[in-house]
Structures are given as C-alpha cells and as structure tokens.
Length: 318
Ligand code: ARG
Image (tube, rainbow, N blue to C red; front, side, top):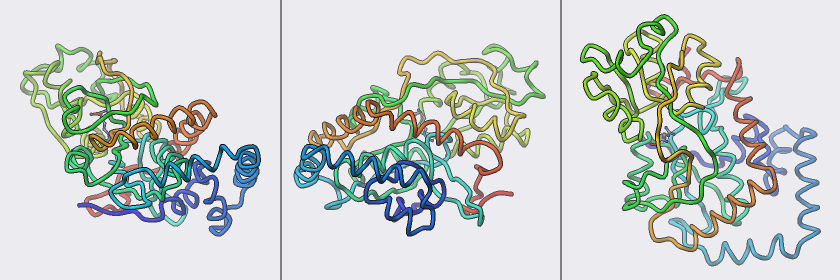
C-alpha cells in the first residue's frame, strides 16, 4: 500500500516541533499553534542567516530552477517508516500517527535548502528501492546502506550517519541465543527485512537457520516480542531505539558489515540533484542541524510519546 503524505512540514511541526521546520515553515508552526521558543529562535536565526547573505537565498533559487525533479518544484522522497529513530510514526496526543525521525528532518532541511516543496511517499523498504529503480521519486531516505549491489539502480549521496548492525533476541532467550552458532540451526527462526542488507547478513551468517523475511522492521519486532521469532538482524540504533519502548528486547552482539553508515539514494543519473543533495548534507552536518535532528528523533522515539507499531491498516497498535 502506498500512501502519500502531503504537507509533511505541518504534520511534523504539530507532532514534534521538530526544528527541521525552519524558514517558511516557522509560519506553519505558529499557524499550528506550536509557536514555541524553539520555533521563534528558529525563525530568528533564519532571518539572521538571510540578512547575512545574498548568498543564502540566491543560490537556492538558482538551484531550484536548475534541478530536475520528478514533479516540478517538489522534492519527492520515498521512505519506510518502520525504522526509529531514522523514520517512524510519532503518536500525537490525539493518537494520530505522524511521520518523524532524523531522515525526515533531513529531508525537510534539504527541500528547504533547495527551495523545493517536500513530498514524502511511504512504502515498505523494498518499495523504496523499487521507487528509485523506476525513477518514480527523486530520493530514497530510509537509513539506506550504500550497498554496491544497489549501484545499478540508484546513486548514493555522501554518508550522513554512521551506524552498525546487530543480532537481536528477547531477554528470556538471551542465554540460549548468544552466538552465531547457537542461531544457525534449522529450528531457529531468524528474521530480516525484505530487500535489506540485513537479509544478506542473515544468509551469510545464519545459512542453516529458518530465515524469515518480513516487509517491516516493526513486524519483526512484534514477532520477536510475541515469541514467534527467535532472533533477527536489525540496524543497531534501531534495535536500541525499540529497546527503549520494549525493554524485553536484547541485543546479542554487533554483526560485522563493511558498508557502515547511511546514504541517500538518489534517482540514477540525476547529477545535478546528487551534487545539490551532497551540498545540503554537508551544510546540515556543518551547521549542527544533523546533530540536532538525531537528538530530537532519539528523544521522540522513546518513552510514552511513541508507540511505534502500526497494524495492517496503518492504525496504532495498542
Ligand atoms: N540499512 C539497511 C539497508 O539499507 C536497512 C534499511 C531499512 N530501512 C528502513 N527504513 N526500514 O538495507
């Protein structure tokens, strides 16, 4: 199922007062009734930046005019929001799930920086890969590992985040499943997300296990918690994030993988967009925004504000 989330800026400001909603969306923040000190500071620093620079606004306009995107004036980004703190649903006070996470904050930052309107398309992770392959979107932002096997269907930006890989089980099984050997048996079910590099890690490290491929990481977490799955390969920071809400989860060990870090998947051959995205990433890292997005996403993805699991209809699972 494919859902288009329009006006992401508004949703995000309402859900999280994420500082990603700077610039023009600081108005959105006040419209949405969330004119916090943070939003005001954002607005102030934004206009300061504008004051300082002819440089600040002029290149943005030029960039937007020159950039080729699938929909004129828009930056269309595919994501798979089952991956806290990268991208996930934050549950608002009224119970409504809204997209959040540092990939989403970075997406908004890049769109603002390039003078484009952000449009996010939510699909399962294998859908992010196929949206890029069919050139239906401009970018894939989903904690994507720059796996050389994917180079035929997308270009990769520079890395914007460094993470690692883990093998995960539940506390009750932590003594039984404590090594690759203990897991590599036909009677042991080992999960990984369809299309992900974790699936490669599962086949490489647990070839004799019963490997279970599921479309969403949240499905994998749910199966582990329900005792229907014994272990799973999950990105370390994602496992740690879900562990905050579901302390029964246990990280068995780190799993070696040689493509550490996340990059943005860019529609293949769009050199101009790739260069612009890399410039925006460098700027977000340099001006401290990236660090802020990560801290905010981690904060939001923990505690009672966040439920994390949605049922098949996209409703919050209780
Ligand atoms: N880093 C892994 C990969 O590129 C997993 C990414 C999964 N992302 C997600 N949003 N579920 O294959």
